[in-house]
Length: 63
Image (cartoon, rainbow, N blue to C red; front, side, top):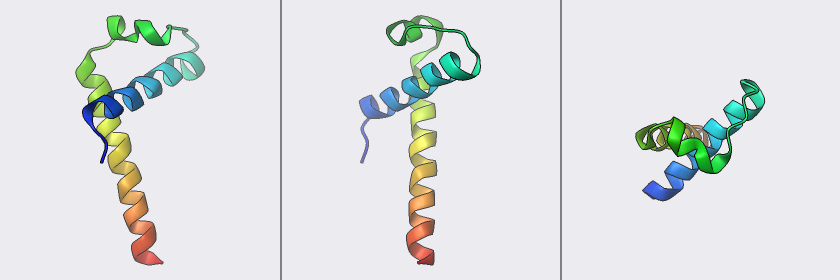
């Protein structure tokens, strides 16, 4: 299972990707912690992992 550091990295990457390609506002990856709180990264990482697990469980239960 994913630990807190992995969840934080996943959330941080998603926010960096969102800022760079969707909002077109470049914030360096290392400086994201100055703009957003850490609990946001962890919550977003948990959400992505939960969605991935639900899709995987649903896929294998249907098959």
